[in-house]
Image (tube, rainbow, N blue to C red; front, top):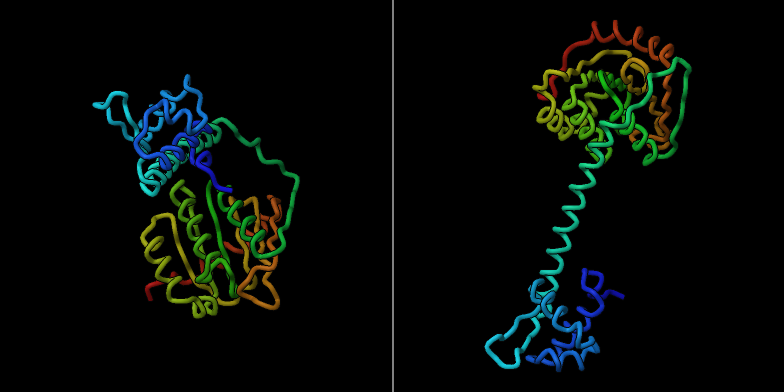
Length: 269
């Protein structure tokens, strides 16, 4: 059950405020009796309520009287304070992450291969964006068929956001699509890529015939292969991630000449 304590008030402050609402203008002594807040604490509690702008006092009267601020106004003030507090905490956590990112460093990549897989649309998307975020130098994205990565929905938007972040940190992004994929792209996808990536010096997109499958080559050492849902080709059924420099080198050897022969594409066409 919701209480004023959920918004940051102490038990005594919550009792005093509720009693002020019922009592109307009242003295500290009267409020202490009505709220069961000890007399030795009541002035500190009232001072705190005034600091939070939840109560007002009539200092000219003797003894001094207090009145509660209306509930809607008081609750909105408590909410604003709580949101400000959460923003400060978020800033602190972001600073901690930034410091730890500089402090923690992965070891040198090993030559031994490693692969993992995620099954289901959500887990597949999580694995993909995780690996995109791990890129240091280059991301190559190849789509020979319909793919959730370039769809109009939430997944396409999410991938675009992570690609933009990669570009911002200096990663080169190369996108190779089959003509069939280009023809089936919703207009909004073209608009999104045109607005975000078209003029970026580290982004290039080309089209080539005869592409098969959808995969992502990351830093020439890692390959993410999308497995489409056979019942819904626009949805990823699974994502296989292979961190194997030898396998990735083979993918690069196959990709490089296809990229050289491919035609530059503008999403504005």
